[in-house]
Amino acid sequence: MQRLLITRRLPDRVLEAARARFDVTLRDRTEPLSAEELRAALRDFDAVLPTLGDRFQADVFADVSAPRARILANFGVGYNHIDAEAAKAAGLAVTNTPGAVTDATADIALSLILMTARRLGEGERILRAGAWGGWGPVQMLGTHVTGKRLGIIGFGRIGKAIAKRCHYGFDMEVVFHNRSKVEDPGLPARQVEMAEAMASDFVVVAVPGGKATHHLIDADALGMMKTTGIFVNISRGDVVDETALIDALQQGRIAGAGLDVYEFEPKVPAALIAMENVTLLPHLGTACLEVRENMGMMAVANLIVHLEGKPLPNLVNP
Image 1 (tube, rainbow, N blue to C red):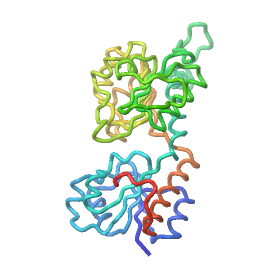
Image 2 (cartoon, rainbow, N blue to C red):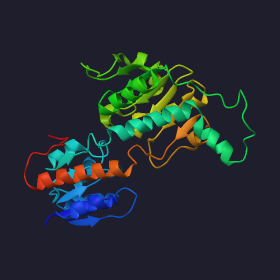
Image 3 (cartoon, rainbow, N blue to C red):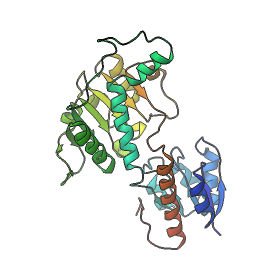
Image 4 (tube, one colour):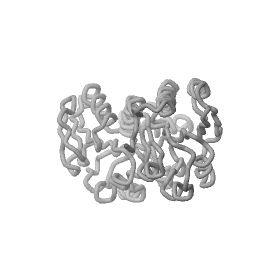
């Protein structure tokens, strides 16, 4: 039976499915693999089921000249923590879990839009602190969401799911920027240049992580926003230059932000924590049991297909 390393605890149903086909070693800790653990994973196991933060970068593969592992079945759709090209050169397939995360991540984007626009987190903090003095006509006035313009950066599965919710649920006008031409957006939405998308009332970033999108949202991009604009990131933390975002918020160049991901997770800058016009979530994008089960079962399915020598359905480094 092939040896499989699972780098974090997964739902019981997923672990049971994995143990039915593999000799499983479960690393039951929350922090990412250390430098030595990364190298040991390649040396000592036939397969690895890693996740966010397990940085299988080129230097790791370079240090293990003849890896025993033949597949990294990533738990999650984003795999920017894995150098897929270096993995391929070392003889490892890399897979991910697309589709399983789409709706849950889109739901979090809507949550961040509403929480930031309507000052919901701030309001709850006031109430819990015993500082609410009662209802008043001008108390905690926020930003109306219905009917506003939404700009989406990245129009893949998740971007389209966000657009669907905002257009049909909140009657929002949708514009989007995407690197390639989108022939059929699937709903009334216009593909536009980056500057026009960033100038929307609400901007949501939904691009994949990786070298191509690192700091895509920098000071220049944030400078394209309106002073009344609200920025939301549910993609990957390093897509945004966090220092530039903090500066834009502190200088009042944008009205607020809603974040589920951070450039140096789990570290969150004190400057962001101090701002009431920023909604901060601890990377909850897919944090629903049924979603995490679906992600895990997809990762295990990739492992089983690889074990059986069949074509991988979710291969990201062909």
